[in-house]
Structures are given as C-alpha cells and as structure tokens.
Length: 128
Image (cartoon, rainbow, N blue to C red):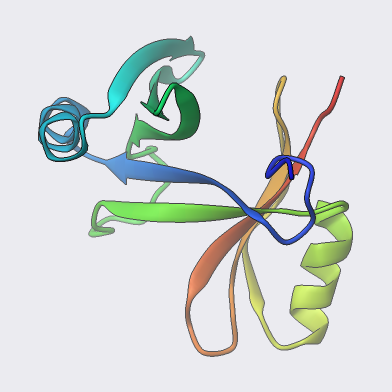
C-alpha cells in the first residue's frame, strides 16, 4: 500500500517551530532521524527520513501564523480530491483554516478543524 496514493492514509507529518536548528538537534538525538535540507522560496525545509524513507519535515514558523501560536506537529492525510474534502468538512460542521492551496511539485492541501476542535490537514498528491 502506498501512503501517498491511499485515500484516508496518514502520509506525512510536519513540525512548524521557531527554532528549527534546536529541533533538528533534539529529534536527531531522540529518534536517530536523518535530516536533509531542501531550499524553498520561503526559506529552508528540512526533510525527515527514518529507515531511509522520507516521513515528514520541519520548517520555520511562517510569518502569517497568528502571534502566540506554539510550535506544533501537523499530520497530513492523503485524499483523492482535497476540494471535495474541504466542502464535506464544512457540511459536517468543521471549519476550514487553510483553504485548498497548491504546493508546487507536491500537490494540493487544506487544513481544517473538526467540530470538537482538533486540527488536521488533507493532502492530494500530484502523481507523475
């Protein structure tokens, strides 16, 4: 089963933090992760590898994040159609926090809050 193609499968995790360098040191020591840097237009993205497989990433807190937002991990769930998921979330009482947005060379994602307050992201990957 390919977690990047299976609808409903957890496929990626991402740490957003004000101290990426400190996080890299901490998590490399705790879990033995291999960390590689990848340049982005907004800065550097650190890819996390475990057992030779890319499993997540780390990035600096974006400037548009509300002040006081603590560092946090975000889970991404693979979906077939992120726009349809966003519509369904709203119909079921959830709240869209980040509307469906393209990620160049990756796919399209949205972030939402369920009716109980938990936050998660859905992602539709581009496949070659």
